[in-house]
Length: 144
Image 1 (cartoon, one colour):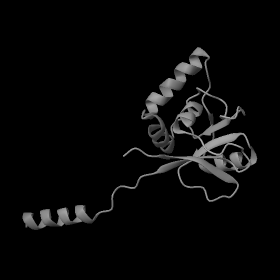
Image 2 (image 1 turned 90 degrees about the horizontal axis):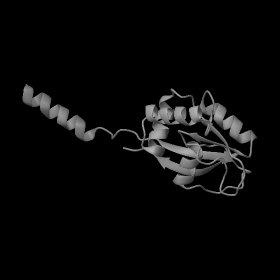
Image 3 (image 1 turned 120 degrees about the vertical axis):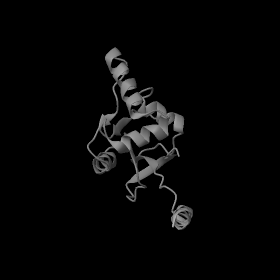
Image 4 (image 1 turned 45 degrees about the horizontal axis):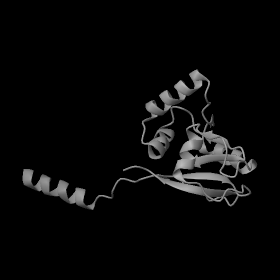
């Protein structure tokens, strides 16, 4: 009986689909002149090291709320840091007056809406956008 159970478990493990990975899509309005970004440029924007696109245009950066699980996965993929580390980083920058974090929006639908209406807005999505008014500048692969 034990051998049969072990054999069944091994067969299930061998046929089970691998865990789904999520990619993150850095998006802007279709009319934004920026055509692509490097991961370092995105890191600099979302971590407050830069507030402008590479062409010098001011960037309005949008994010999900501080406690969002999707936000945790996004920042881990972008920086390799945990959400607690990212939040601590922002607390230090805000306390010292050096920078403010990206503006928090309640959900990805709101990010899409804001980015579509503002050519200087940039945000991220956890699924590939299918709206022709958005352009993906970079796809960030989630860490395994």
